[in-house]
Length: 389
Image (cartoon, rainbow, N blue to C red; front, side, top):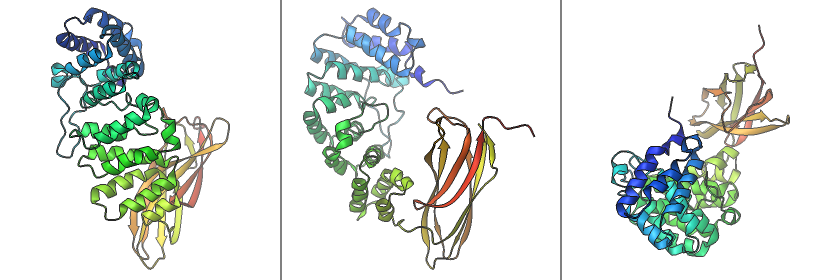
């Protein structure tokens, strides 16, 4: 069984952090830090662990913010290396060689939280500290309060970082300013109006690092949830003369809109036309017990005179607690059908409950979506338990 995620912050993490902080600042009260950080630590969940370590830092680092940042910066491990594709090598766990050389890994979530708590009245100094931290872990969560509290200063700083030599810093420009970053403070002003970050994304979408480009794609996908036509227009504009890397970025940025069947986005990718032919969806069974799987069989027959590019997904209309149904789109296939070709596709769909989606018994509907259009439908009954035969 995989180790619980929360154990990435553990008593050993605290001990190592105390060692490095005292190494660079002999007056550091390591005993107090470790006492506060470890108190009931192993009973806490992941975020609570990070916040408790941040509390301990607040209690023990210098009261002067500039001096506190200097201690943190001096205690840091060397910056994370990147491989030939621009991806981080061993996104730091804080263990191994990097952990022995200085602060790295998940303890820097707590360090970033300290900077966010104490630095709102010292924005330039705080951002300089996050610039250092993000090269050893990430500061994508810590920078968000500064975008909310001091947007102009922070955005101006980010604009200067788009050409930073470090890919970790360039990624922070995009990832830290995502409107709907998972786990992060929602930047409601950018949810409503994302235009302040568009120049940053424009500058970064041709970055040499795949690590940075993937963040740009995820940022655009965030924007698409509230401003779909803006992102569709971006795709149309930036597909012209695009390199293979940029095409991959734009396709990843379009994924939510394609699954939703957003017509302008489908058109941008040459998927504006629905299937010319027939589609059939069949299910392996119509009664399914909670926790089982169901097999989907898709039969396609085209009567077109030219090849058709198809994106085929399916939407499961899950029964909710109140008896209504809510659709969730799942990825299926991308393919090209030759003239007069027939094709059969199959996929197994799990009905095991997951933490992000609770399942309820009742009649469920599955829609087959081809280029965003519903082309076939089937139904099954989800049961709490399968009745005895």
